[in-house]
Length: 318
Image 1 (cartoon, rainbow, N blue to C red):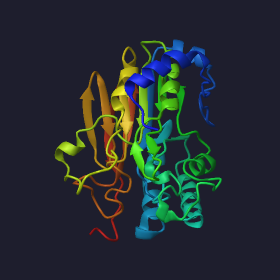
Image 2 (image 1 turned 120 degrees about the horizontal axis):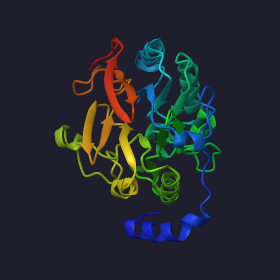
Image 3 (image 1 turned 90 degrees about the vertical axis):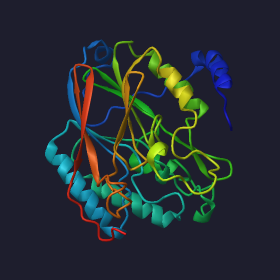
Image 4 (image 1 turned 60 degrees about the horizontal axis):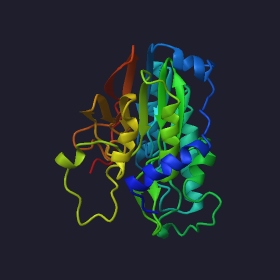
């Protein structure tokens, strides 16, 4: 259902008190400190890796490329890692056996990381929503259910580490005509508003999202051919999301999807779009950005990052 900012604000005022809030996620290896103690702690030091758009598949030597990237990440010994989505290529338009195989391949390969791992959902991780997949909406793993089942994670949630609050968002909105748009739906916006209310104002917040909230990409990239029915380059209702961040110490948003390495500084927040593990979909560099991942350092409430490559050589750079 299409959604307006006015409608959201009206719904928020009426519904927040009755909203059921998703619990924070604690993964194996996470700090066992209680949420209350975490929020009262001054932000400390934290090093992790943000990688995105692995697009794993058996073709184009992609599984080998992912193993190379994961081995290099593991050698850096980060405290944890976050995947920004598009784990597989592609669940949108394929049948159940192919999608099952791709998720199996990713799960096997990710074991190379050997660190606590968090995931965001990407558009290519949504199962069977394109009609050419031949998948019925009655399939028990249709759309985002396969991701939740195979990855063992909600599509949006939050967690705390070392005095920082992390919010993982779901930016993929399946449309009624079996396409998709970059958008946060009503229920998620209500959840986000409630989650932010539980965080003390000075607490530094890091947001993770697949489709960018803020990007300059369309200002320098080749223009898309033809008229686009839906916005698939950025989050269409990003102004509503950004409005919820007002009054909170959101220091960064880690984004994926576009396969470029870009940072836009807007309202004291660094919107960092990370280059892709797969580069140009396993065909070499993408617009001059090679295959790689982002190493993130948090120090006393401030963030810095660097982009690292891992030496993959495409078998088909054309």
